[in-house]
Image 1 (tube, rainbow, N blue to C red):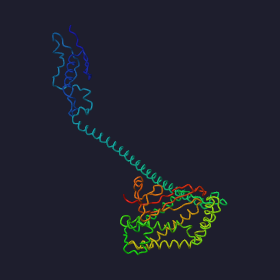
Image 2: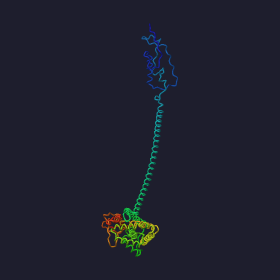
Image 3: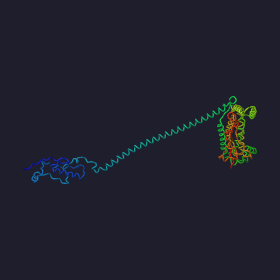
Length: 443
């Protein structure tokens, strides 16, 4: 009795068919082969082929093929024939990776993303750059403010230093006027040596500048000078003929300095009438014969002249003006005859200022208890005056060692030598406060 055929279930969409169906297994294998050979493509727009009608029953082939005619097995699909059974992957939308036409669009999108990212980074860097610029500008403004503050601070300090110097100078003048020694009735005059050194140096520099301003381009011509002028020149500067062509400025400085020394520094007290000055000098000499020590006489002289100095600006003004006018006229007369430059108001005003400074310095020296002398070494004709490093300063700029035993040709400005101490005693002590400025002869 033949076996009754088994009823097969309809084919499913599983990739692994049931192992009991040989035909279904063959069809599934052919489907997988077609899938491996060609890439998946998007679902075609054409209408899919109709599925073949399902068989009500499929009987396995018998060994003697007796039932093949009644129950034929499904035919094996051809190799190139598409699988009529749809796959789940075919029903999915196509992937961009499987679509060759979408590759350029994907590359452009990637590049656009990179450009957008770089632009964003650039904007961030630009913002940081702007912030750095703002910081630099802020630092520059702060630096400028600090420099201005420092400059103002330095100016304030300089002004404060100048004020302190003025206060110190005023205190020194106050001490010099009020006295601090142990002289008669406790009165006396004391001024530091530095004040005299600075005053003498300032006066010498002022004279040098005055000569340079008004005679730098002037020429000296002795052909039009009178006999009296030449005689006066020979007395004041005996070496003037040697200096005319080689040291014009130094010659004029020496001439004016010698006149200042004679008319201002060598007087007993500037502004005191000559007769009264002679009387005081004689009285001092007479009292000196009764005094037991020079210290007492120096204290007496200091106190007496301090009384005159206190009211000198008022009571001695007339006599002082006469001395200044006479000295200005004498300087102008000599210089106008031997130079091409003529006197004028500006030049006379500068000279008067120099003379006024010399008058004040001379009076301050006179009221000291110590003995101060303005030293201007004489240059005598036909006599050698050698350079002395202790009391002289060469204006030629040469080394002092090379100036030893060198003859001087002229003295351009005097110096100051002090004898004694602040109380007027110990006259054996000698101190050079300011050296005389000299011009040495060339080797």
